[in-house]
Amino acid sequence: MATTPITLEKIAEVTGGKYFGPPELAGRVITGAVHDNRSVKGGELFVCIAGERVDGHSFAPDAIARGAAACLADEPLPETAEPYILTENSVAALQALARWYRGLFDIPFVGVIGSVGKTTAKEMTAAVLSQRYRILKTPANLNTDIGVPITLLSLREEHELAVIEMGISGFGEMRLLAELVRPSAIVFTNVAGVHLEFLGNLDGVLRAKSEVFEYMSPGSAAVMNGDDERLSAYQPPEGVEKLTFGFGPGCLCRAENIAMDGVNGVECDILLGGSTLHASIPAFGAHTVLGALPAVLLGRRFGLTDEEILRGLAAYRTVGGRANVSDTGFITLIDDCYNANPLSVAAALTSLCTLPARHVAILGDMRELGPDSPRMHFETGAAAAKKGVDLLICIGEDSAETLRGFTSAAPEKKALHLSDKSELTPLLPSLIERGDAVLVKASHSLAFETIVAELKELR
Image (cartoon, rainbow, N blue to C red):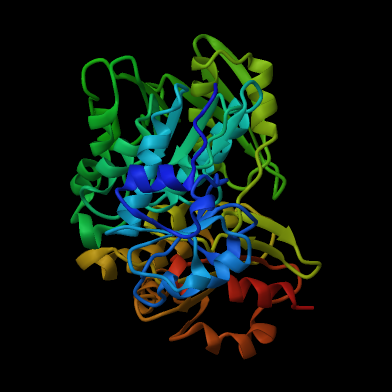
């Protein structure tokens, strides 16, 4: 499919902006877009965004020096940042550009939404579909009102299908993302207690994420978790086919005979349409099977053979900070620190406690849970004790309730609470023993990657 090159003059036209720079460069073509000057490789449009802590406009000269084709800004830039397009709002302009560019592509778009497990489902779906098609997938977790447009601007003539992760935290945000992506199929992983500070309750979560259906046409497909109470009962708009996956007998695509192979992965039988596929998935935790099932459904929908589907599942690789298991030579380390909520923590604890070792969980605060946060942290601690955690280390103000829940359920077990992760560093050598299985999990804003790095250095 031939596509229109994105020139600087076209960007100005589409965004309603004004071009500043040498006239002979107005026909320069961009290769994509970035909003971090350190990500410039050469030829990209650098989008200047004024954030709460950092103003991207101040990095525009550096982006040009690194090889950016131009900048997109909403305030005048110095001559060292030319060429650039000046707009009223750089984020809205980026979205307008992506909206126009997406309209040039007549290929299937798969949107991946839900509270938990989006990235795993996205990666597994892309791994399967790439066995037959040339795929564009969301890199890392660029799933926001900025990340999705940047992803869409990565579309190229050779792409035959796109898998786009779509993440939100408030009402109206999914409507915007859906209008940009216009998916012909979605994967809806679940409805869980995430962003309750903004969405109120689980019904609010469902209502916010269901905005996606406003931009799905008749003939589209909604691949939904049939084990989720709200998704099981939900009926998409007329003309959108509902396909369910899960472990329950009522699901169209379901998994049985799930067996963990330690840290090496999981095997299971996947039942669909009267046939059974025996799958080997190189991912830690039985819950990761829920990411494989929608990939199987979509593989069938897009015409893949069973052999291609199984090959795709076997090709899956974890994305950083998501159930990434490694043997450090001293401990078995489960790096799951990308994010945390009650559902994902419970699943991670279950997987941790399947390993033949002393089970250590380092848990931080779970953010944006709203007024029920104390109860949810308490219940998470109690669940950790009941699942078989031997040592619990809680970090953060909210996690004091996690400790209380743990000690109330298992007063004989060892546990401690720290107010800040910096307090853990000198204690690690005395807390962690050779051969331990150690899980690290917290909300992303706590940056527990530093704890993971310290654990890798223990000897």
